[in-house]
View (cartoon, helix red, strand yellow):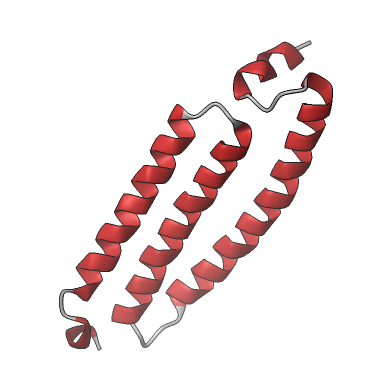
Length: 106
């Protein structure tokens, strides 16, 4: 099964690496919490792409797809909880900048 892919696997892994790097840089550079959440989602999708590429090579087991389903479930929970926290934070401070979270310390 792996011989059918040829060099395509390297392309998928390289694309996953580029997407993960873009997400990591976006998370570290931006101060907007919503952009940081989107960057985390981009990194999770890059990991999903790498797992699906792994599963294409190792087609006899479904470990890659199982990890992808768990990551999608974690990402959905992260979005729900993250957006609830961001909305509460916006109601308290009037902004969504992560630098303003230091003001919440008691």
